[in-house]
Length: 272
Ligand SMILES: Cc1cc2nc3c(=O)[nH]c(=O)nc-3n(C[C@H](O)[C@H](O)[C@H](O)COP(=O)(O)OP(=O)(O)OC[C@H]3O[C@@H](n4cnc5c(N)ncnc54)[C@H](O)[C@@H]3O)c2cc1C
Ligand code: FES
Image (cartoon, rainbow, N blue to C red; front, side):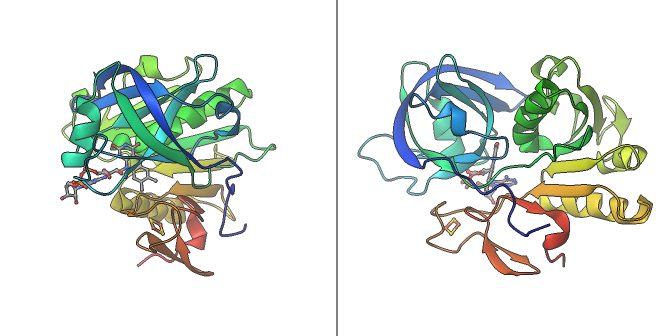
């Protein structure tokens, strides 16, 4: 498997979207929906991301765009939805925008997850807002007739994705650190049950979670085991390969995760 997966063929453009909806989800996060240029939807694949300017026209504070995975699209309405947890000022500015207001967006960026045509059993392992790209992937996979097990971990019950957000056919299993819903503990502890079932594994979440998942996979798998694709969340300044602020060390050298990623084959990455 090459280090670079699902290279984006999508056009990169800057556009001003009009916010059409904004609602809370997962306790402290928001689903922000806005318009996108006509024709863009056909280029979007699960795992792609966009870079959103977190300030209004004429303001440069905060200066840098914030990267967000695409949570979902509505091709008929030409809208895109992002799942945003506002960690700081940039995220907070974006989620404070209300329907009718505008958002400056740069995208489509990065590569995307790749489901092999022969794979029929897909395991998805998400931590926190890492739920976003895997939600879109689960929709595409179910539409293609694949079986999907979707594992999500959160600190507590109110930070979980409501089951109604996922396709009905998805087997949705959760873990919470405080035991308020599902398995008490880490989501990675659930993954061992599905390693012989899965043809491919897709993951997104904090780096320690993905490292823990890798340990579980290495401990439990037999033979070659399923191929695993990870989406990394590095801090990004430019998002277009210019600043090298987002590099990931791979067995084929340093790669800019904004253009060569964010999706990588788990074993192509050098783990500390
Ligand atoms: C490819 C890609 C896809 C992403 N997709 C999503 C997504 O779908 N939804 C989403 O909510 N976020 C996503 N992120 C993370 C998101 O880009 C950052 O959380 C965001 O840039 C933070 O901006 P801010 O202004 O809210 O916080 P900042 O002002 O940048 O940071 C405030 C504080 O929060 C900390 N912080 C920032 N981000 C995180 C984080 N992710 N985890 C823990 N601490 C953090 C910072 O270290 C700092 O201390 C993605 C990142 C990448 C690279
Ligand atoms: S964010 Fe600048 S090179 Fe990736």
